[in-house]
Amino acid sequence: MAQARRLTHIDRRGRARMVDVSSKPVTLREAVARGEITMRPETVARISAGALPKGDVLGVARLAGIMAAKRTPDLVPLCHPLPLTHVEVELTPDPAGRVRIESRVRLEARTGAEMEALTAVVVAGLTLYDMCKAVDREMTLGAIRLVRKSGGRSGTFVRAGERP
Image (cartoon, rainbow, N blue to C red):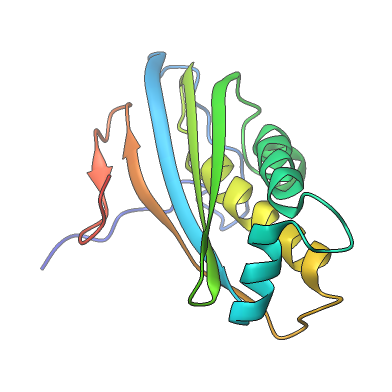
């Protein structure tokens, strides 16, 4: 049986703490996260046609995701502020009734960008919901997951069953 790993954000007394990364080397790190928002096929068609009252829904959601990645430490209390060098958010409408969301975050730092990539996906999805709720209140944001991460002491992680 594998030995349980200690939670790094909890001290010996069980209190939340920010991890000290000062002794870790600076390395190139990248994280990729994905999620999706499901909706009625008619809503996806209106998004693709640019026929929603609030305008360029995908463009605004893309920008919101990028901005959110940059603000992750303001939203997640124990995240380190990181010098992000690249953030990309892609939104792909699927006529069957969803928009796929993918973010890629890159930086050279002492700690990784997983939280920033995940935050970008979540906020892009929330923005889509906000911009489309007038025509479809039954949308569902989900399947949010880290797909790949590289760099640092723990090396590369690729989620099974996902293309990196």
